Length: 152
Image 1 (cartoon, helix red, strand yellow):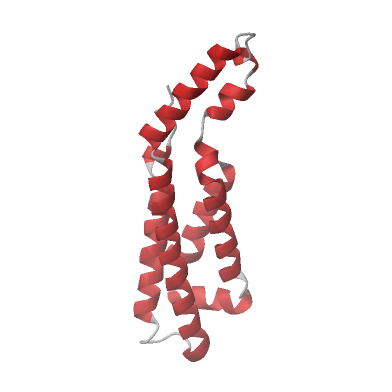
Image 2: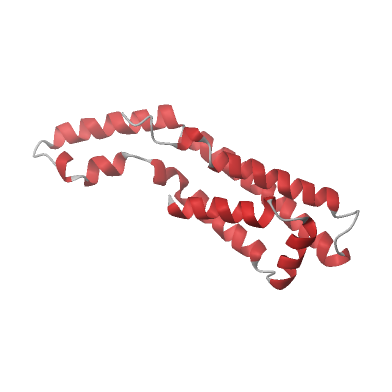
């Protein structure tokens, strides 16, 4: 959760709020930002589905460790079913992958343009695409539906 909030804040502070010139200057100082974003998004993707799966609670909470393994197994089955039907993890993961891919492609294209020709009329539309895709990604990551209110 904290990592996600930090990631959202980083995304906002690095690609949404600054001007194009400020972002380009930051990238000149720290060109590894592009790789850091790729790694951060890969980590979010890798942990996304399991991070929201409530099955671990059934398996790990002491109060749910009963001598009746059958009862725990039935509870686990219900929780997993609810997770898949209500949370739709595969659909959400695909949306995350698509949004992250769009953002990374826009970032790479803008970075190539700025590295080759600097900030100017040719890079401005690409920067707008970076900002738009960063906001879309951030909105997806901060979607209220990602709260765990649906857990039975």
